Length: 113
Length: 112
Image: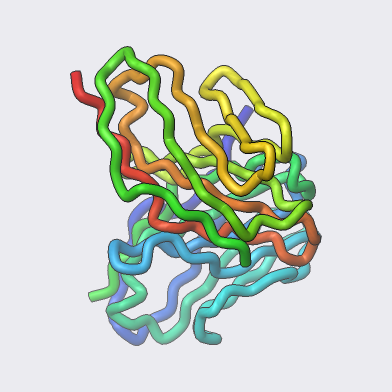
């Protein structure tokens, strides 16, 4: 079956711009989470969506936002990009039960210059 | 959030078993223990999870202490493809708190 698909794979943006990243979860998975991975901070939770509602949010500034559509696809947006936003952004989907694992995508590598 | 503690790094010889330990002394009764691994340039990959009993799947085995304050991921016969960072994570039961709190993990090096 198809895995979690993230687009684009790579992105280069300039400081001050905004960016939108996309994630298509595994069919049937209604929970979608986003994570940021940097060498210094490791993997950090951004937010989680279920049935188009944000259920949980990590400790990131309001410049980071997301949404989920009725087909469970999700997007995250970062406005007013800063150099420190350069990172690997990972999306994960899961069935809505702790008795299942998360399936991660390969990520979007964002570079802010 | 309950925290896990893992060694920063471990080495193992190819084709030998590997035991990766994890301490989670503040685990709550309803937390599941999940293990993920991350190969270079890839997203984390689910390995195995359990609640109280030991678990086996095609990738690995998970041994959970009787008091649940520690667990061990067992790779029965390590290959070079098992070289990765392994994360031990507690997944809370309460919906609305669906997030994985990653620690620094254990970097496993396989020696040919």
